Amino acid sequence: MSVPLPAPNPNIIRNEGEMSNWGLEFALSSVNFDRKNFRWTTDFNISMNRNKLEKLTLKNVYYYTQTSEALSEYVVRMTPGQPLSRFWGYTAEGVDPETGMVIYKDLNGDGKISDADKHYIGDANPDFTFGMTNTLSWKGLNLSFLITGSVGNDIYNASKIEMVGMYNGNNQITDVLRRWRVPGMVTDIPKAGELDNLKASTRWVEDGSYLKIKNITLSYDITGPKLKKANISRIQPYITLDNMITITGYSGYDPEMSQYTNATSMGIDWGTYPCVKTVLFGVNVDF
Image (cartoon, rainbow, N blue to C red; front, side):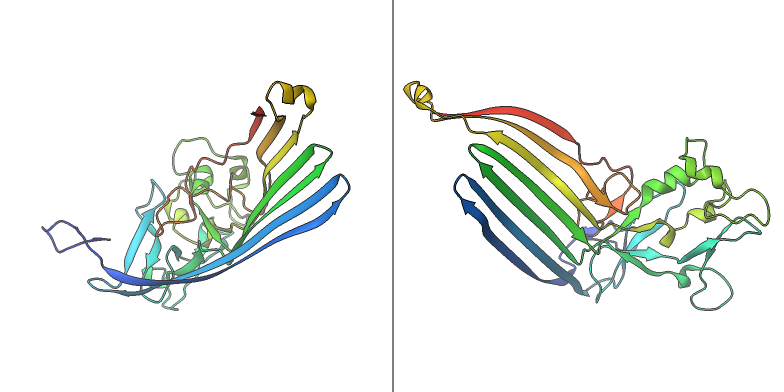
């Protein structure tokens, strides 16, 4: 970890803490049907992992990941006793119809909104992930499809800050057409031009659970004595479709992708490029 020291000393890189991991994985392979010319097999796996920061040495709290060009806020808080990549911020309770400002929950009851009202508002770690491949074969015709999914993980949708934040002159999505304009207006989009409406909060946290048909491949095996004479045992034309179907409640482009790959900043969508949908044609030749 990069550990800050009192000025004017620079940060140092050291083994700063300890963490623990434990998990379970279950895998099952089955032959569901195998008769005459038709065969159907399934490979299924499901896994879970739990991590926890056990201790830190020089500091007890670290903050990671700024997700807005307008506010210098960190949205991930790391401290002993907690898993990595938990989101930190306010609870947003809608838009005040009289002022058009986002209402943040006063957790400590002191009558004002401050850092003391921040708490853990989401967790990028999934409850479990799974995958299943089915393969069907009939008289040389083969169809396989891979289904993957994740359940229980949260996503911090920082992209939405840029798309509905209305803090600069950039284009916005059509959600801002229902923004607050006059006192008494009831809406879920606050007034334009207010940085306080962009604070790290539950407003930007969404359920990132998803199910994807990740891969579909259709192929056909061409064999025969004429091919054998040419020392070819099989010609297999195929077509493959990748990332064609995603089922999710997440409002962003792709719940599977994250802007950062490090373990302290998982589940952050900030202009993240989605998985590409591809169609691939090809031919395999076995000699």
